[in-house]
Amino acid sequence: MTVAVEPHRSVRFARRMEGMKPSAVREILKVADRPDILSFAGGLPAPELFPVAEIAAAHAKVLATDGGAALQYSVTEGFGPLRDWIATRLRGRGIATHRDQVLVTSGSQQGIDLVAKVLLDPGDVVVVENPSYLAALQVFAGAEAELDVVGSDDDGMRVDELEELLARRTVKLIYIVADFNNPKGTTLSVARRLKLVELAARHGVIILEDDPYGELRFRGVRPPSLAALDEAGVVLQLGTFSKTLAPGLRIGWITGAPELIRACTTAKQAADLHSGNLSQRATSTLLETFDYDAHLDRIRAVYGARCDDLLGALTRHLPTGSKWTQPEGGLFVWVELPPELDAEKLLAVAVQHKVAFVPGRPFFAKAPRLHSLRLNFSNRGRDQIELGMTRLGEVIRAAQAHARPGTLHASTAELVAGVAPKT
Image (cartoon, rainbow, N blue to C red; front, side):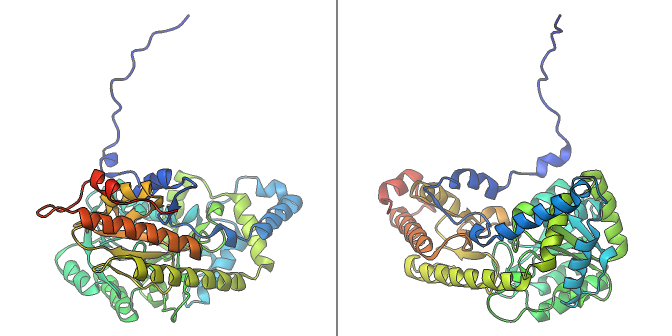
């Protein structure tokens, strides 16, 4: 016997979903993942640099010697020896911390989510750079926070604008990627770091310093992190192995004042109980014998060369009126095209001509610059970079040539008709 049930006419989603939009990067990757497309869209580390054999051996050793414990439930805070290693590493960078101030997370992205859960009520103000990391904007929208923005330039966040904002508004959280900002690739100057920490302490505002790229500096001198400059306990720092070992491990961490870490631990218990125990133990075992610093040196050398290749290709192939950042590390270059162009409209044509990027608009919490875009250099070799930028330059020049007087953008049909793909 069956019971007829009338289907629901509509699903009543939570109010917070109104502000949460799909990730533009993830949506683009669904298209750009085709093998025939040269994609510079995702923030992907180079898979040929993953220490696959060493990671496999570490997993095998853990399973052979302590498999039962590795496959069992574990504590929320994370595997103790791994937290010890992280704390020691951070102390070497001038951050006063110890095991009890380190919470292992499922990638640093979970850290953003946990901090939002423990600090933000609906309507609380979060300050971000404009543009800022897209997935962080998603988290803050889900927390129903109000985003306010300050500008940025080649020296990072405009802390003079932040000082003015803090004088007139009550702010709960400041979010920043100080080293090799995503999406721009810029780095906060030392003078601005000092001022930012001083402002946060004076106004009683927590800084969430997201540091996924700090170990990837291939030029210049690494400045002190905000966490290293913090004497008032106002900085929470996120870290991750995703850009240095492998993102598939899903191991990140939060460190900060004990009361903040305790609160994040409670929030994590409600989210996933604990991060993957096998991955944590295998990573800890790997780091016992693996030359992590030599591995980082190799990554830096490769990424530095690829960044130079991209910057050179942009000079050769992008039209006059374009400009771009000059990263000293990280994964990204930010490009601003001539202002009459719309990067989102260009993307549809670029994909047809076998090249992809991320338009800049989704990275802006307010006042987007539609002629901007982000390029990733870490996941492509020299020849692919040259070919990809040749294709992109042709698409852009065709858009300029077909722009009609009195209109802002050429139509997609005009663009398709105006450029032939190169192979």
